[in-house]
Image 1 (tube, rainbow, N blue to C red):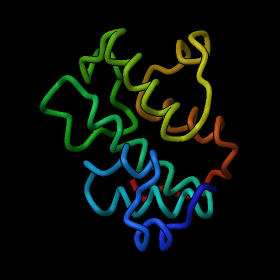
Image 2 (image 1 turned 30 degrees about the vertical axis):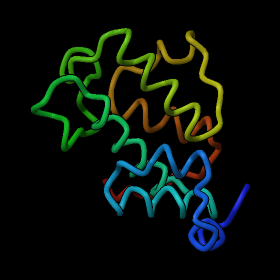
Image 3 (image 1 turned 135 degrees about the horizontal axis):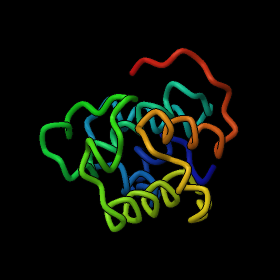
Length: 128
């Protein structure tokens, strides 16, 4: 880890990841900081759901995407929106996501499971 949350707060110089999540609500930012310190599925899920909501083109589902929502058919994602979301997730979680890998992802639940697998965090009951 580059810096701990306390050193970031005291130095006033946020890391690039902190900058990426600054527009999210406090609970999402807190989950991200917790995840960086101790990776766990529940906090990863909170962040992934917030990212999906942030990138969702279909307004009616922006605030509350659920596992059953299909990215394209239900949420209105197109290839550009998916690509932008993938780039953001790569930057945020420091992972590489290949085109062939993301093609398997159809639903929000698929995406959450896929990111947990990429991050190699144990699956636990989700709060989402």
